[in-house]
Length: 178
Picture 1 (cartoon, rainbow, N blue to C red):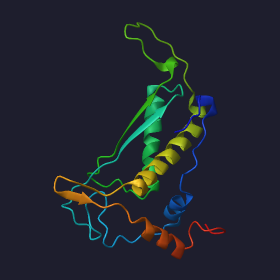
Picture 2 (picture 1 turned 90 degrees about the vertical axis):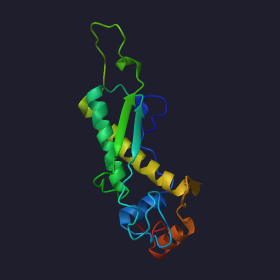
Picture 3 (picture 1 turned 135 degrees about the vertical axis):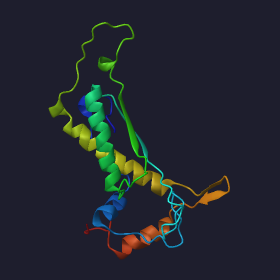
Picture 4 (picture 1 turned 60 degrees about the vertical axis):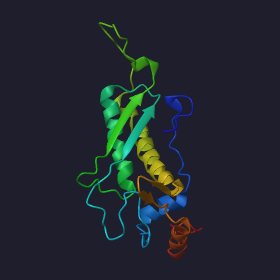
């Protein structure tokens, strides 16, 4: 979430690659033949049935209390869902959210504490920002990842040229198209 110097100036970030977002929203499937994804499964779904999870962090400088931080964290899973995740059984997705606002810090020995926090009605722009920032971060991590090898295994990067080819074939991301 990009807040540009203060919670009063929060803005929803623009996706770095509008084409990727368009492809997901248009429902265009990129064929995975010959590509083994980050979870080590081939297109046939092999891989021993072991699921991996997504670990997401929501950080803000907005003065948000613990209850509303939980609500912000829940919105991150909506961003995950926008990318096509079904949060299947065993996926182990989790989110941690925190605020760096001085007004919500809890002094160690305080017997009584009061804090100025945002009210519920002020959270909708933050909810939207969390959803969109999470979606963008997932796409960025997928499309900027490099091939890696270790512990006797290898994971290949997504073949970007094939993705571009599919996008072109479906007219996604081109001027005047959805």
